Image (cartoon, rainbow over all chains, first blue to last red; front, side, top):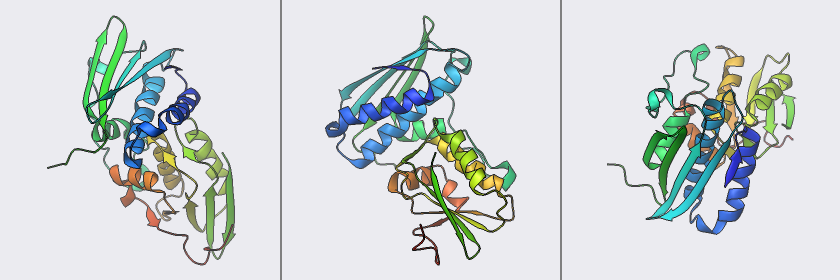
Length: 138
Length: 111
């Protein structure tokens, strides 16, 4: 699907996606992981990649081993240093210093697998998998 | 962004009358709660029973409300649905708020 790079369109696309996908998401946990990771990935592109320009985001979802494979393409700015952010949880301090952002990449990394990014011919290519069941954390 | 709020016994309870607090609604949420709390000095409880989805921008907006109250007052949350509770837990922000499973007495029956 092709999504205009605006937060309202991301919300609408997520709602349409879940109406279409309903039966293919076997558990509420899978649905939660997919919805949150997609929201974070797409809104990140809207707010950073396309921060000063209009644009579109292409989203392709394919069934993959034990889950779903997501490919996301945009023509916005590259990631800083053409590298994915580390996604560390922001530090908690005094009330006035509490973080109001910086959770996005942490959540994406926490809930997805095989996250890969590359910049190619003016496009950002991001792919990741979300599994039916979270792998057991050792 | 719609809210239903009531004030009794020193507690202002604000029920968020929406299914999502997301990137598209985060600013409206922050401004809406600010309006609801205008001039209020007592305890503040956010009832999130209708909210089925929150993303990192929505979480940031709830943190902004927490900061709005200053160091003297905490922000209390109640009735978190499982997906909302999970976002607070994963990001460790459940430590920053007072989280009640249900509405604190004596507001159990209000709104």
